[in-house]
Image (tube, rainbow, N blue to C red; front, top):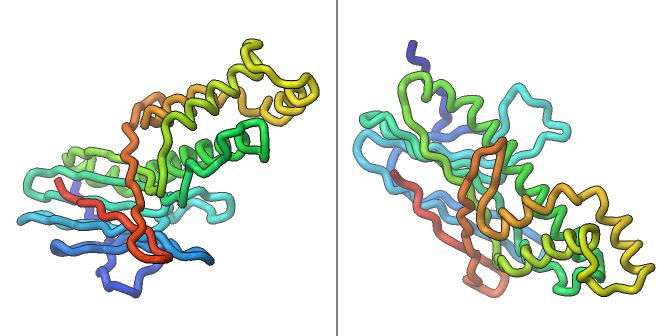
Length: 240
């Protein structure tokens, strides 16, 4: 039994969140995230061939899921090839600078900030994959094969800093290699105790890998480059 997924017509500048839009031909679709001090732009360059169309959504969620407490990723982008019955999907979130925490992990809640940012990002991607599956299952039931990709768009991605966080978290509890005044170490243990289980996730993240429900997802890192005084941007090719 074949059922068509409902897709709205794409009209630049008139997009609503959590709506699936059909990209009928090759074009560039910009995603913008605006802040008080500027904005970040990811240009999605859809390169479509005959018998292909694209799908685009901003903060897509399954319509049956309550908005309250619902996590979402910024962008869902797909290319559908009706002839070959193939789909390539990409979900990603923009994090202005996920490596911006202090190198001194004992100060300014640097370690806690890094741990929470990584944990929250992984939860967003996990939720986005679930939301996507809520409609993708109709394609899969119709015989399509899907290639999934996940990504982060950020100004800076320093693997060594994330590894340092994992090492710091481990050393605070599991060995005595870290030299800290007893009161400082006790304070850090109190603050970080709820996050002991995050060590492996952080190490995987540093290796550009997410493990979600025991499935590995290589993490594509999209680096945002400065394109004007207040704009950082990148271009991502969307094709099969």
